[in-house]
Length: 220
Image (cartoon, helix red, strand yellow):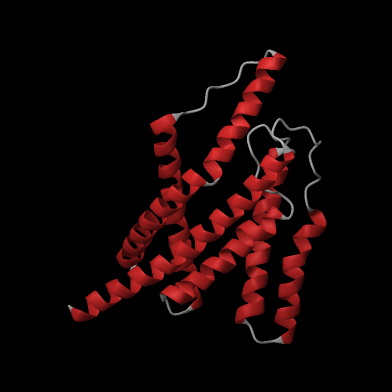
């Protein structure tokens, strides 16, 4: 079982990661490069030294490797969650789990912490990380209660868990940013779209690979 889970996660994550990396190359990466131009210009104006970012092939390789690693993690998380819940692992079902995972880790958290470009103002890091993690876990638990439990009390608790973190959302940072507002808005929208595709694709491929490996095992 463990070997099949790992194999499924690696294959599904690799394929999904390559696809998402290609998508990022044409969506979010150009926006990041544009923001870095504004950031470098601001540093030059202030006389501050800025670390030189990776460029060309090195940057593409590093971004793609990170995206593949994240996609493998997504696939393994979805497989583990479905196995623990006793749900059948199939492409459509796993894609729905991926959509719920995006709702918890991307959509809900973006209400308090939108994806940010280089050079954008930020609040204190530890507070943002704690709020993000608490929101993702609380939203995930709330969605599980709403979608998988039958009692009215459980559904009420689920709604409360989804809403609760947003009463403690981090305070917005001082609006000081080198990136134009239009660029930041486009990046936030593109990042969320890419993340949604990444979760759903990792789930669908994990369900497909799992089904194929299961059939191969039964045939042997």
